[in-house]
Every structure is written in C-alpha cells, then in structure tokens.
View 1 (cartoon, rainbow, N blue to C red):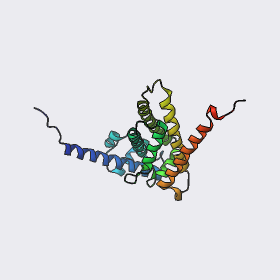
View 2: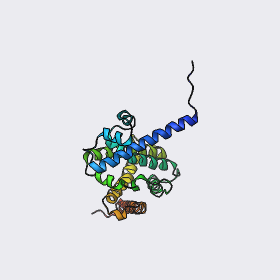
View 3: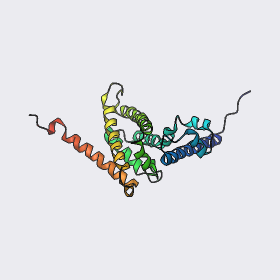
View 4: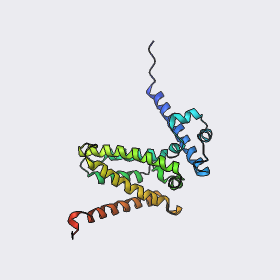
Length: 221
C-alpha cells in the first residue's frame, strides 16, 4: 500500500505550527532567563511557560540558552541570505556591510536585536557564562556560512584561501563590537536607527584604520 503524500497546504500548516511552537519556546526562554537568570531557569519551566512538553522542547532546541538566543541564529541566517543576494561584482567586505545595513533597516521584518527585551538579553550574554558560550557557538556557525558564501563570490577555496575568512572575521567583528556597545548603552538609544547608525560608524572606523595601515601610507624607519 502506497502512503499518501501530504499536500502542499498540509505541509505549510505543519511548518507554520512548528514555527509558532519554536517562537513560543524562544519567547518563554528569553522571558524566564531575564526574570530569573540562566542558572535558575530550567528547560521544564520553559516548556511549561510555552504550554508544550519537555519532549517538544528537545525537538527544537539543544538547551535553554539556545532557545533564548534563537533570534541571534535567525538574524545570522538573514544576513547570510542578504549576502548571497548582493551583486557578484561587489567587493566582499562592502557586500557584507551592505547586507548588514539591509538587515538593520528592514522595516517590514525588523531585526530581532532591536525588538523589546533583546537588548537586555544581549547585555546579559556578556555576564552569564552559559549564555556567552551559546552566543559564541551561534556566531561561529553564522560566520562559517558567511565564509563559504564569500569564498564562492571570490571563486576560491575557503580551506586554502585566507581572503574569505579574513574578510568575514573582520566584517563580523565590527558588527559584534557595535552590538556590544549598543547593548551596554542607555535604553533611550535602543532603537533600530541608533543601532544602524552605530554599525555604520563602526564600519567607517574599520575602513579608515585599514587605509591608514597599508604599507604605502606609512613610512618605515
């Protein structure tokens, strides 16, 4: 007997339901960690807050920190999608910078970093060891994908060509530095426009310093 293949509409409903469940778990994890701290928050409490089972939680996330920082993973995916869409002739560093700009200035689907409470969670990730470790894992995964994208743009091998990793590590490092400054700032400066402007200033600083550090611009003694 041949199994009936689910219709596209059924698949769409399942995907929407899975996304809703994942979002509910991520929101519950974020709320509880901000209320109690990471150490005092349990997976069971997150599942209960989201009104799902512990088993359902495990189908979506490896741990409570991964759930709370799911927005970081999703933003990383969006930056990489925008990076893939940049014009092929655009220099990689500029392409990454403009992908970040497009992510931060998207009004229809705002970056998760600028949504309520995310700034507090980003600041907490600097002080909670488990959150910090989870953030670093997510960040590295996103950057590895960025390196593969840049390697494809350059027509090189990311295992042998140093350029993709150098470009991505520099570009992503600028973004991370700006995000950390933003997370530590005053709440009145927490809007998307403030973060986007800070990121642009950070990229300007990188390009200015890089230009000043080229061998042709210095005099050797």
